[in-house]
Each structure stands twice: as structure tokens, then as C-alpha cells.
Length: 368
Image (cartoon, rainbow, N blue to C red):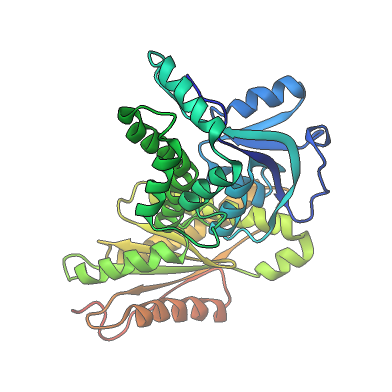
């Protein structure tokens, strides 16, 4: 059983910045709408718009990433969640682009055997001023910070006092817990997504991790590196990528990046512990623990060949090659120097004509 709404938030459209302004659901037209699987909104949209195109994704973050990457045109979400997610995912090309005309009600759920409790809660909600509801909601979610934020103890005391006349003593604590849990719902969604982004730090275009996870993992692997557990790094760069963008357009350039990322992901699927990240632009880093210098150079050469072959099967894309530089971690060097040596090997390969692998073996490699 559900109570009457405590608050209602508007559902809004999220699109890329260059997308036309939307005034309501009827403006969706032939656009692709992305939404989390299992959402009741999917059924509602299909009833209202029988021909609507819907892409279903596993979670909220995936919906925003799909719009940012151009896989979908529109995402729909609760207004404060939309603003927070765009900020947390650092998707600067997305905006809130109008209201749908629909609202999302915030309610309390009560076990179906407790209709009297639901009725008491409804009575309490009716007596609660809207300003009080907003204050409580903002205290837990932080999206509408009160002018004089109360302490947690005083907030609970005020809440209990405002409900005491409507609820029996044994129900006061239950209601406070239910309301707190409900109010924390949006915050919990945002916290989980933020944690996911921090842990995975996925790049919106390639769906590969970014530097955040790389730096964290590299620090741990350096501590474990030894002659028996060598650590290697492969720096990869797509050759003449600027020319690809200039001649074929940025959409083709994005497709090239995604295709290279997919090939590299396949290469790492069977290698437990490897980490592949998008380093920036058209450059990638492939971290290879428990891998000898010779093995890492072989992996880099295999990857170079796979990319060159793969793009011959894509008539809509230019011929693409890549250059790579390989370095093995040496005892006592910093993470920065380790990365620098792999990067220098990469640029050595590019100076020598591109479409090749350069291995940064020095007099001390691979001694510990």
C-alpha cells in the first residue's frame, strides 16, 4: 500500500546541447529515448506514443552515457537527479532540455496488512506544510539546501514533534525511519552512481575506464612488481587521427575510437588483471601485470596487426593504423617515470614512421 505523495518532482528531458528544444512528450517524434530497464515510464511512453523508439539500458548512468555518445537522443529523469548526474558524470555536452509534463511522486510504502498505518501516515502528510516537506527532503538529499541547516538530532526532533498528534507512539519511530529512507532514496541513487563512476571512471565514448582507476591500480601493482611478477605498460596511439577527423568528420572519428577500443577490449578479455584505459584523445594505456617485457612487446605487435586488419573490413571507415610503445617497470622508479618511458617509446615509434611498436628496453631492463 502506498501513501499519498509527500513531494512530486517534474520529469525532464536530457539531451545533447545541440538538440532542439522539447516542449512535451509529443515533441519526441522519431527520436530514440533511453531509459533504465524495468522502468514504469517505458510502459507509459508506449501507451502515449505507440511508435516511440526506446533503448533499454541496465542503469541510470548508462542512459546518460548513451545520450552523450550519440547512441540515443533523449533520456528522461527526475529533475534534481538529472542535474546531479550530468555534473557527476562530467558530461558537458548534455543539458536539461524542457519538461515532459509528467511528475514523479515520492510516496511511502506500507505492507498490505497495515492499512491503518497507511491511513495514519496519510493523515500526517495532510497536516504537514509543503515547506516542511521540502525542508525534510532537502536535508537528506542536499539538492535544495535550507538557509539554516538543522543538526541531524534537531531535524529528527522537529519531525517527530510535527507528527506526534497524528501517530501512536509505536508508529512515530517507524514513520521517521520510513520517511528518512524514502527521502534518502534519491541520495542513495546518486551516491551509488557516484561510487560506480569513481570505481570504474568510464569514458563516455569508448566505455573504457579513464585515468582515475588507472592511477589507483598502478600504485598497487608497483608495490607488487618483482622479477617473478613483472609489470609492463603499453602506450597506444591512433596514427594521423586529426586527419581522420578533418577528412571524414568527428562522427567517423568517434566510430574509429570506439572500434579500436572494442578490439583492445577483446585482447584483454582472456588476460586476468590487465587494465585498459582511454588516456586522452586518441591515446590508450594498457597495463599488463605478471607479463614479461618480451610478452608485452608481442602483445603490442599483435594489437597493431589486429587493428590494421580490422579496418579493412569497414568500407565506411578509413584505413587505420596505430603505434605503440612498451616499457617494463624498473625497481625504484616512480609511476610518473614509468609512464614517461612508455610514452617516449610510443613517440619513438611515431618518429620512425608510425604503424609500428617500439620497446623501451634499457641497460637496466628488466633487472630489479
